[in-house]
Length: 256
Ligand SMILES: Nc1ncnc2c1ncn2[C@@H]1O[C@H](COP(=O)(O)OP(=O)(O)OP(=O)(O)O)[C@@H](O)[C@H]1O
Image (cartoon, rainbow, N blue to C red; front, side, top):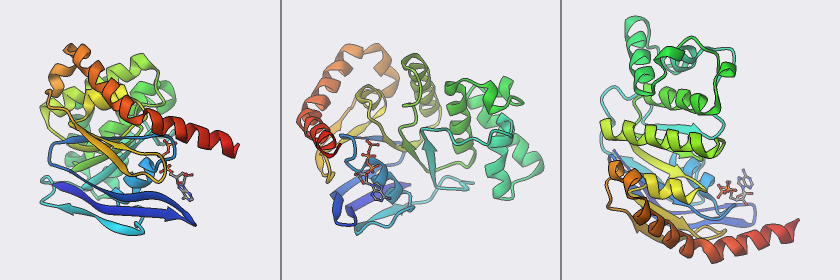
């Protein structure tokens, strides 16, 4: 399935937050979106998922979803959004219950996604017993359970410390290598963007416009070993963003 954002513009009240944004997320591709604070990244993701209607342009999905997909566009948020009174398997189960998947089929899906996210031994644990990294693995397992065509990921690792973030990035790469998923991945963290993105869409400060799209040919599985090359790419992305970020920072300071 392909997600195409076509000439997306958006405003809140009199403030334009997005201006003429167009790009696609192709099948099996992770596209990262980076840009200064407040440039409209989360807004763009909500528009991509149909949660918000853009003032101009359109978000289109085309092609057939994966067989058995219950929810072609599925979000993963920074704050995990788990139900505290449900166990790990109970949290995953919920999305299947919502779709009327029961009995043996439900148990099979839960077992599969818990195995893929290395959570099998934690099936009966409650969220409060888990570290932040494990909670986010549960959120990823829950997203995978509905067989999404495209995952919409809003700063999924930003609540985690840097070591846990590294481990989760390894997990995401391993998951992607086994079964290529498509994702539109918003992040502040340029290291995450160059580790995970096939393309990085760099936005300007508000109103967010596309400054540049950086393509990264290097296979995902090789990236952990080729850090020096990635470092260069990361610097390049930062060079594109630096002035924008500085201006955005000044703008926020002015308001305060
Ligand atoms: N529902 C809303 N009503 C009014 N203004 C909003 C709303 N949602 C976002 N905004 C404003 O729109 C702008 C873009 O917000 P958005 O959260 O999309 O940016 P962002 O790039 O994701 O920010 P950050 O990097 O800080 O997470 C901000 O100025 C924000 O205050």
